[in-house]
Length: 431
Image 1 (cartoon, rainbow, N blue to C red):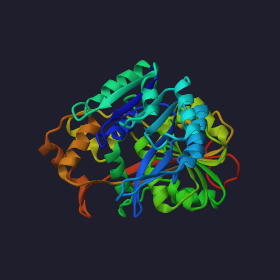
Image 2: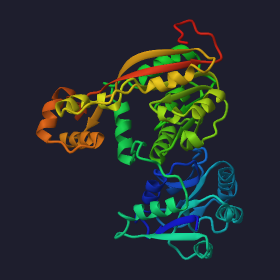
Image 3: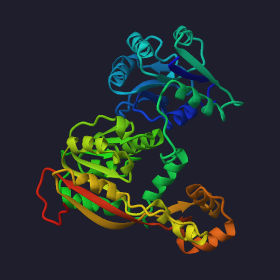
């Protein structure tokens, strides 16, 4: 049964659990999810495309006084049909969050749902708990499994579902992937907006100096996160293709695009390994070099970029960040020397294009609400249970109270590798 649905009472956490599941999948994801928007008229329901990040697809409005819904069937029949059609053609897994009574009269959209269920691609979705012939028909299919989410099981149901997903052969992210959740995305957004940090501003200025005018250029952003580079580059006039494998990063980027009122960013929920990018003029891959560690993945990027490729990566292993090296030294634990950028440099020697390596330092300090949060962060990062008194004595020079937060200071040593394909560049070229 390759079609998986969650159901349960309103507000029980079905969509929350769905996001946790999607965040663990290691494949390209299409389909849609709904977001509620509170406004003067009531509550609007926006169908967000997981195929390309399109939004403002209002499928219904519920009046707060009468609680009567106004349903826009034409959105289901146009946008909804198109999302599922394109997702079936170009994505590995189809998401439907949620299926309820709004679409009960949208026959074309319902046919697309059944087309997806009949396909060889897995479907993961949410079924509204309500009396509906359409929902009953889905539940009764032989290829559908339904998990009921309750207060009693919602905290451990994730592991059970992931086990079932694995049994279907759907790829799951390994331990090498940095664990991202909603809270960590919120903290990351807070940190990139701290005026004490010069990341990503410093790197962006370097890129702008080389590219010049971004207007009408197509920019591919690999490991885009919540738009660290996608948002500022879009503001400069570029058409942006943003790719990230985290649903939480994807969702945060959609919110930021709305807030900035931008319409020139396409968002894709996929690991780079399974994403088929369009031709682009410029590509940016910031601290996501794992996506390019295999030659075939770099070759795909190289062949799809016309002018410049910018890869920003650490020059030292992660143990040299946040003063962690001092902690390990005090514990007499050897640090494995690692220079991540060298793997890419070795690959580049087999290509004709010249490249520049610019070594830089950027301040990207991390903010915490209390000391206890720092303790938990370091223990998790090092995978060691530490004595608190020892830890804070060792890293006291790396801590700073700033703007209502406690900062863990971090000057990140990085290399910006610029691969030049389409234009001449007057500067130091490495071959």
